[in-house]
Length: 113
Image (cartoon, rainbow, N blue to C red; front, side):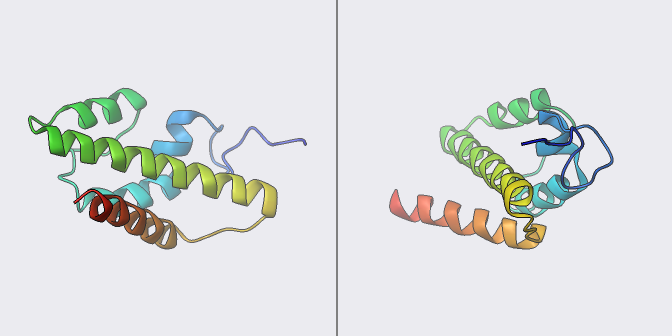
């Protein structure tokens, strides 16, 4: 299947891990909604190293675990939407992707409470 090297969300940059998952406008909108609820970093992530630093920064083990779960869930949902767009030509608004992330994280937390 021929796939364009451009980002399927914005078509403004070549698709890379950092662009697709962190710096694309679509991904930034998803992250913005998530980070409002998670003690956001001083500035938006622009690369993978910054994301990893944010995950590892808190002194509390619980907050570190929550950030790990959050990052994994966000990455999974953005990647899932990317595949949905490429394979099914179906786009879901970033706010709905966030609601899926929020629901999944709440279910994880409530299961382990």
